[in-house]
Image (cartoon, rainbow, N blue to C red; front, side, top):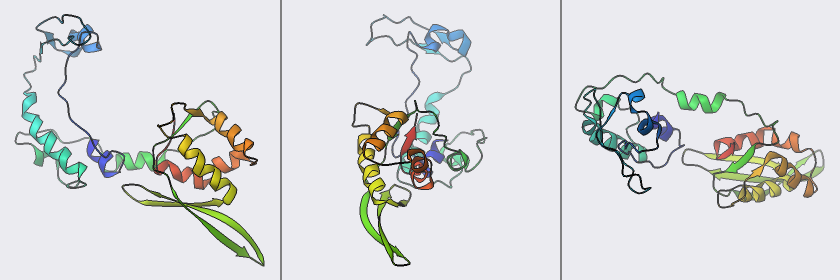
Length: 220
């Protein structure tokens, strides 16, 4: 799963941690449910609540450390996605049961539903490059705004009415994680209409905006 997340461009960095049993975690509270045993009790302070424990199955967790770190380092550099997982470990490991392309398939096939006005909207991508384009047809001319988004995996371009595009480019900055207030879809619609624009649902549920889910747009 981690390999596919990197290959799809969803992750750019990561770090493996060994499991630590803490006093108030589900495992710490009910170790028998997870087939582990406590060796010590935590003192109980926030900074000192780790519990020593043993894994009766006898698994040598340290033996996986080097392979996990080495594979992850390659994935972060966009390399070795085609290597079998066995290659990273000296000991035998089970074959993966995750089908190739599982992550990409989930991204491409999941239909985005925007009907719930309480959904929170977040933008994780970078600010787009914008360019005004003049279109003409049968003697008539009108302006479009071209928005180009750069991701680690691809360049995405959408073109919309200039007024709508100007609003979209601005609102994406408002939706970024640097803004402490997260807007809901209802608030987004109000902002759109306050800008003097019409038919929010038609604009938001159409292909240009739906394309942005590949560039960092999220609904929560």
